[in-house]
Image (cartoon, rainbow, N blue to C red; front, side, top):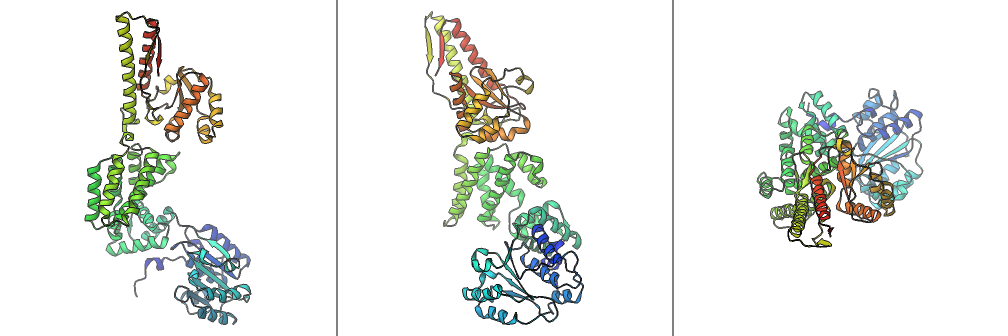
Length: 548
């Protein structure tokens, strides 16, 4: 017996075997069980989601002699005849190759005759959007006044191309893209049934390559089976001509670490392996998108990637902020578009990736001793603040030594931009935060944030405790579980808005920072003590101190 392709061998024969389309299965099963059969149905969806399969099951179910719960028995003479195509009462037509008006006229003439064996004459028209305008007009009259024994099952990947007069005369069902988890479950079932060695991680990898189409996923498994019964990640990558996930994750890490030499070497390896650079950029975008979703996820436990992906997420989520990932994704996507029109796509991509790594390098995070991600820009800003304190202290000491009687010493130094909250060292550990007094103008600050129409910012901070370590510093405290929210809110624009509003409320300069109870760093507290020391020194000299 000739070999049967896996996607044909494991095509569902009953509604309960259909994957990922429960909403349609329930509707069709109920209509069959209650006897409410319409004259025309339209199944819409992308390739490999089960449109034709659903139509074939429905055609057998409405004609089955022993139907159970809306499912065909596949054992009676009618079901067997439909399965082996020996019964002419069920006709399947490919509109892509039979799109002329003559084909539809044949159906119109044939539909007048009653079925020979089955209860209904069923016409399954696949890719119905390929019919010509004249063919649609010929089909319209039949759909408008069909005989009681005729049922039309239309399937299409492009319902927008169907005339409204057709759409208004059919029951439309939209099939969803099948999730990676559902595809992986089906692949694991097939592998077990055929005695193949397939891990869950490899099944999920195939599912991602299938891109929501179960038939594509089964076809990939079938191709890999041709090379052996042990289906591994490397075998899948080699068989499909794609890049292995480990290579893609490593390449992403090089990008996030801003290692130009390694990134250029990765591009050269892709070309040397004969892979398409477009596939490489697609893989990078896919991995970076996963990383962005993971970094913004409030519940990491609900995110259920493979073990390899989990390791990639945990190791790299601190290497860039969500804003940095968005810029990186946008830059790679733009480079992918430019490659299509370039005579040297390798050079185009290499130059774009290097450009992405070299621009705005001040925002590259580093990991301090406490495990807290802070960028080099933050380090420079804190260092600049420390230099200002040192300079101020030196000037005041010099004034004291020289006996200068000054009523006011003004140090006019350039204003240092407020660092982002995730880049600012935290005030202290959780057991120390309780010692700071609460911020008394908390309600007023939240109300003013709402007045600026920054509603999402008001929502994020309204339930967070606020403390005031000094009259010029306000800290909004986030629990460890809310760390991802703190990092999302802590943009330069939000911090400036909060600081400006707090300053307006207090009547003197106030800086607002977002802090975490965990992984605390006392660097900012040290700077605050240095400033306080400078103020005390100025007071001992009878001099007022103003930092502009």
